[in-house]
Image (cartoon, rainbow, N blue to C red; front, side):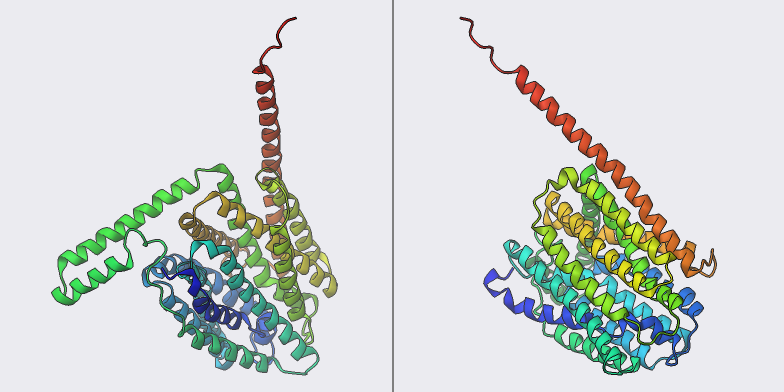
Length: 453
């Protein structure tokens, strides 16, 4: 592994990549672009035939990409992620009809699933002592890119009179710069998971054997045995991680919260179209950008809060999840677009705070290798839940609920999560206090008796 003195080399192009890949001004206006005069798709087609592709494709692609990413040592997957973003932007820009849009959403789902390579890459390039610092840089680059893209799109539409087609061109330019930047990333010498049992030196020796012996059965058999050992290690690590009730409940919120967040964020533009149809000057981009900046600032503030999270964390999750449920419910019942915008602002900010709490609580309880595994499993479980929820409330072969009914379901979903974690939080708090009282009583009984006079 490179010494930490050279950490600037890989992190600078990675941050540029993260910023440009997320700076997509067309994103907050995607529904308006698809249903407007540019593509002439109906709201029903977008709801039933396009957005579900994003969810189902992510479910199919997540695990294969998670396994292949470590084997390929991250950079090739990042480059493929860049290609998929360019392909998606091209299809959105020049394609026509539902099939072209579906392929665009499929390419976008590949890019979303490949995010694991973006975050894992830097850990394989720097010293573990720098993990906290570099994580803030690469995550901040993504959040800043998304916020800048959303706000830029809003400013161009509202004050510059720029068409949505031009926003799509700017998006294509930005993701193309990201793709070019990814080609200059240094190649890691070893992967995180395989490192220690199958290092780069061992990989080099196997490569030499392949060159000298050709298609040697022994080399192939060794590779198969290594894959089996790696999968078995994955199973054992999962069992170890989720055997802790504290870790398990934070993982439950992480997976369930991810499901609800992406479901609401994915369909909120359709709700805004319903509240205020054909509003080209809508402030979708401004709301999305400002809520992202607010959430990022709030997550930094949470990181500096002094609170016994192991005791109060679950209760905090329950209380703030109830506020999320209330915000979604108000979005669902209001006919005022500004109230709906304000509710989404609070929803996104609160979600980013809570997911940060879950992330650092899980990180404190696990070592770095298992932390990466648990994050991947939480994402996979969240995607499964999202696919089930999409299949029930959105799919054309199920209930086919209206957008208003869908958001009532999402509000109820978060209310159920709130109830679960409030009950769990009260139980944890009472159990901790009872244990503390028991320890005090035990210490009192063990005090030496005072000598008699």
